[in-house]
Image (cartoon, rainbow, N blue to C red; front, side, top):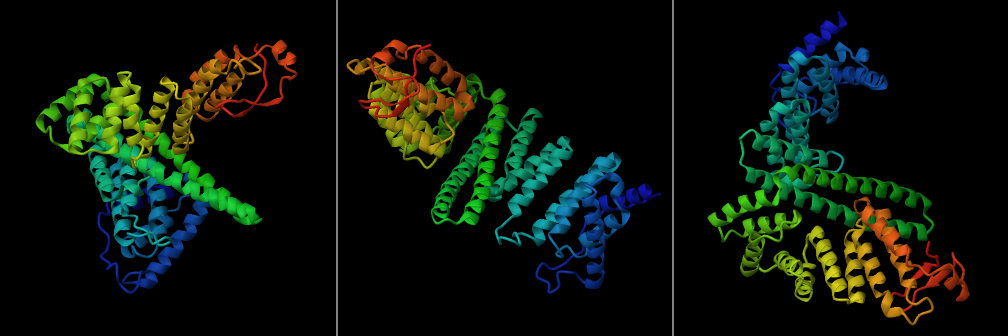
Length: 485
């Protein structure tokens, strides 16, 4: 009997498609009948707490909770923001347990989110706008419950991004890109839409990561100050904030990696060049299109194409910028013209895009490595590492510079072989901080360990394995003595 009563109430809830009109600026947030609202609010909250304590078990759901919550939602929507967050949990339960009325409940979730955005456009705790975030969650929930409603999801999330992309969590961005792919696969959008949305979302994620990285630097500085003054409570508080911030950085990077993988089937060089060539022929003076062409062809390593060079040169002629300079630098670099490329990468490093700055410094380091300008190489690589502390490739470049310069140190105690100790240190660091380059870094470390000084050479120079040693010359780094194996 209890189950039947819940289902009947649930069906009525799923069919409720309008909320009683209440002026958002009305004097009482409890609606026209404040006594009834407060009573129902108290009833549903009490039953909800019991359900929550039972870890939202199916047998702990009460018809009274659903009935009272429904009354609060429909008659006094301004009463509390918890009406909406708790309502999500209630509707989630109904969707999972009553498949027959699933779409009606999804419609109710949409109404729930729209109503929340209407009555709570700003977060009561922070005062910050949250409409875009609410719409983003609405899109995610619809897509989670019914992927066949992808067109609806696509439009919801497209509007949310246009409203304020900075409010969107990684999961909302991920759902938007998946819905975009669904639109193209079902013939409702052209292939170019995937490319446009991919670039748009990549920039959003890059901006998110940049802001979070800046926040992390501020938190680390504040933590250091608290530690210096002996404020242990402050240190603990900053540790928690740093941990949360790092988690958000990793989430954004994970989503970025995911949309990169989703984009892959639509991102072969041949496909991109075919689509972009046609678009550029239509509007050759379109600066935004030229930016899109050069950015994506670079990201997908399609820079050997004639189209990339033409678009890069055209863009640099029309609107010189760090970004267009970077693209010209890439072409010179690919052609082995390192000195020419270095000039453009130096210019590109003034970009406001962190990912582009990192790439510019990384490529600049390679240019200097190829021209045996080792000090400049290390400086550029260190700058790249400062922009992205999670990247291992800058340390690989420094390690290669150390290893390559070994022959120029042949008059040292170990005939220059001490440079290999410093080089391997960098390869090991690269592998430890960046799994994406670990295989390459470990391979280089294994290769150069074979060039360490022999045990005899170490002994006759009056040293022992495990001792600290400062490598001389331009390297000037402390390392540990090791023998070749």
